[in-house]
Image 1 (cartoon, rainbow, N blue to C red):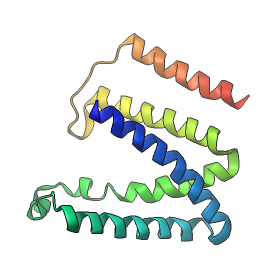
Image 2 (tube, rainbow, N blue to C red):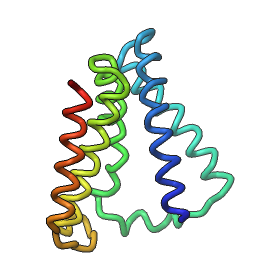
Image 3 (tube, one colour):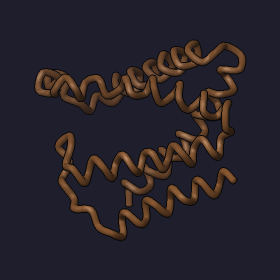
Image 4 (tube, rainbow, N blue to C red):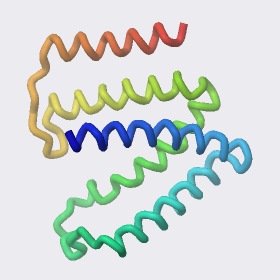
Length: 141
């Protein structure tokens, strides 16, 4: 239940973030917005970390380099989302974003990439993904 609630919160925040960032980029531009978003987020994250200190800082050496650069995807996410919102609007941009997220998660799980448990693909899952894709196409008409 807790995982579902955090997923719901994350989804709500992704939508709000995209809209806020698109509006900010109207005033200062896409890359300035992307930089500002990450500076503010870093400041908040460091502040919370210094208060909570829930990690094992010395364990960084055990983390494969590939996983240490995961945060860099955020730069692509922020810039891509704000640009998409400008070009096609918030609802269409978020719909496509969500289907691409689910599709990529489906591929990662079905292949067992990045240490995820390999889950066999079922016809039902494939049909569900295709229905979601069809829904996004219908949404665009």
